[in-house]
Image 1: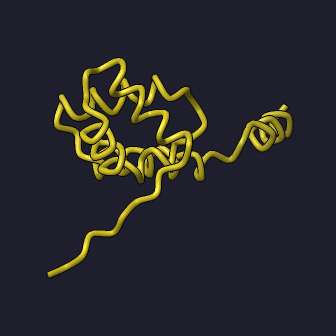
Image 2: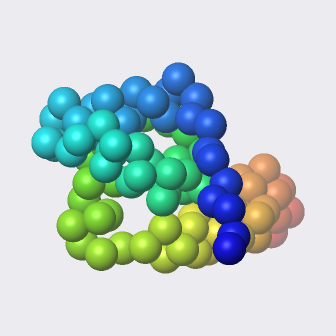
Length: 99
């Protein structure tokens, strides 16, 4: 039998749990399960929005059956695009060299 790993939530992540319970009717236990399910996504995006906004996004993801893996794939696609972006300075130099 494989033991489950216990995830320790940060204060911010616990705030998301509390927002899910207060604003979307989850029990604290169910809200914690949802946050732990999406923990990789939350930790990848952490700090950009308030806890209530992440609660809304997680609730929506669950209702729309969007698994965390799908969300992470989209983040990775965006990050790959950012890596390919050469930046405006290079574009400006190339433009000015053609004038």
